[in-house]
Length: 189
Image (cartoon, rainbow, N blue to C red; front, side):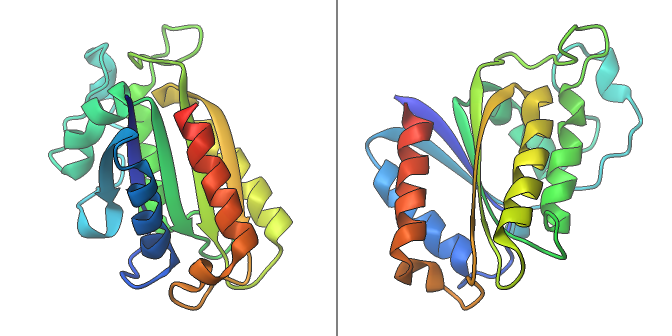
């Protein structure tokens, strides 16, 4: 059974990320071991860029927060699904901090720059935008997801649901729900 980490990077508990998280975790029930990490409910400090993690030669961080406790799960999971809104044409700040903290997986002595225990994992990003160019946001998500390669996520898939600003409105969008279903199957494959 696959081990999937679901990262919810939204602070809106009645928003689209939470609505889709519930739908997807129900789909995964009995098909995968699921760990959910809701960034808005956790403490994820900014990376200090202190390089203390580089002395360990195993993914670690000297900070004592919820991200540090999650490092073993990130390293051992089969796949990660990120659910998040688009904020000012970018990842929301709390997700950017999460991404920056994967610096703790970087090893400059390795050809692929990674000390991840597994380097064959999938990462999917399902993002929501109320307004703006879906194609540009999709490009942004695809580009940023590639940065997770340092943590061993070498395959990526992205989807941006447009006109998805109203709380839980994603549940009324059949084409975007189909994309979510396809993403779940891709993560399980």
